[in-house]
Amino acid sequence: MDMDNMMNEMGGAFMVAWLAGGMDSLGGALVLAAAWMAIGGAHILPVITWGHIMTGDLSDTDAWTDNGMRLVAQVVGAAMALMMVGSGSHDAAAAPDMWSFDLWTALGAVAAGALLWTVYDRCDAWVTAFVIMAIAMTAVAGTDDAAAIPAALNFGGASDMGGALIGGGDDMAASLVDWVMGGVLAGVGALVATKVPDLV
Image (cartoon, rainbow, N blue to C red; front, side, top):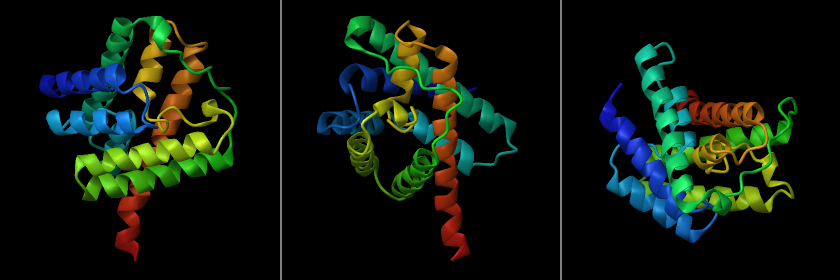
C-alpha cells in the first residue's frame, strides 16, 4: 500500500466533492481537470479506478489491494468534504433496489466505460474531464430517474458513498451493491476498449 497514492486519492476526491458538486456541469469538469493536473497519478473518480482494475493483471493481488485502497481513500476524502460543507448541502440519491436489473442501463454503463477509457488512455486529463461531463449530461438527460444511473457512472460515486456513510443514504447495502456493480460494468467497458483494437 502506497501512502502517497492514498493521500492523493483522498485529496483529489475531497477537492472534487467540495468544489464540483456534480460532473454534469462545466464547473465540475473544470474542477476535475484541475484536480487531475494538480495531483499527478490520482484516479480521483471510482470509475477510473475500476477501469484500472479491469484492464490490469486480474491475478495481481498487489494491484487489487492498491486499487481497492484507492476506492476506500476516495470515499473517505469525499465524506470529509461533505462533512465540511454540512450534511444538508448534499442530498444522497435514494438507494436503488438491490435486486433490480435493467439491461439497457447495464449496456449503457459498459458503453460509457469503453468510451471513457478510450479517451482517458489516449488523451490529456483535461480532455477526459470534458468527456466525463458529456457522458454525465447525457445520462441525466436520458432518464427521468437519476437513481437508474449506476453510482459509479454518475461520476459522483465517491460522494454518493461518502454521503451514505455519513447518514445521507437510505440503504447502505443497496448503495454499495449499485456502486460496485456500476464500477464493474464500466470496468468491463474499459476492458473491451483495450481488447477490440487488438482483435481488429
